Length: 438
Image (cartoon, rainbow, N blue to C red; front, side):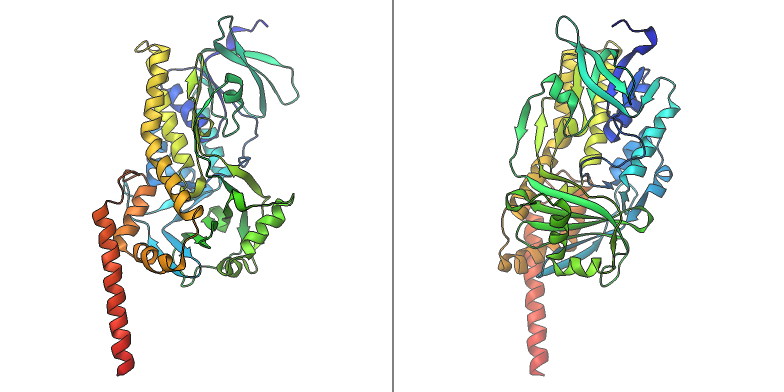
């Protein structure tokens, strides 16, 4: 099909949420003409669960493309602490440390936050946006190189749109671009979880009351419930269970409520509360890397790399991956590098940014979700670590990417936490004994 000149772009991005929208902004600032298409209308919630957290380092990356924290403040709330609970044995609550000048993270409403990112693209005259656009297939030339997309807007006619440089798949875990391009799975860790979430209102606060906190409760047998505060006084309530122990039986809502009712502290916090949004979920959350690119196509965000959301890294990974891809595409666009070498460099940069956290998250799932924690271990080693200020700080800094995920807890620091815990138990036992004798 012949196309008018104005239907050709340097890059076509399929998917306009954090990965796609931030990539488009960086490319436009570098002189690219960009088309961004998304099958959804904005504002809308993603169709799959996504950890609704942005860390200080994510905020800094957003500032690089002209998005100030004030722009998404109304679509988020400041979270100043973390409460971790291993029911019924251990509870530890602590403040979020300062990272890059911020002693908080933000819990975001994804519909509102994604709208801010989408609307930001209107600043760039070389970006064209088309929401509610369905991509049907990739278009290839005679040599098999991807040169565009075939799609349609709403109920409109099919059309072919060409990309001079490449088509980018930023279209999530179930990426059509990845499927049509034939992207192979290169890493797959079969430690899957079943995740469902919805927004709630009217939750009872933590006891004792603290500032706005993220709250995670584990039953120590592969079942977690996580509370993420978000905008307008609402909270995402998430069920997270090792998938080999799940039987939804065709009733996801009933299953979800059953998980929530199974833990006493969750029942307390939800007493009198109301679920105010529809349930969103995945029966098996895959932990994967896909082939990152090929002839005329490349993947970014969840389309190329996704993992269990328990550590809340999805938005950061999407935004940092977009930055690395923009750099590689800029090298091609400005003649500094050929396609193959630039895309190979992107693949290496993506792994360097994400693989250590991927492995750390897999270790956490393996040890905390796929192993039942013995009560004795929880009452001793787990409690000693979770109550230790040094451990608490370093844990938050790992999650906030201020410490390397593969070296955030050196043996000396871990040993110190254990020794301080043992010493504290001995002191407490002594005072209890001497107090009772008196």
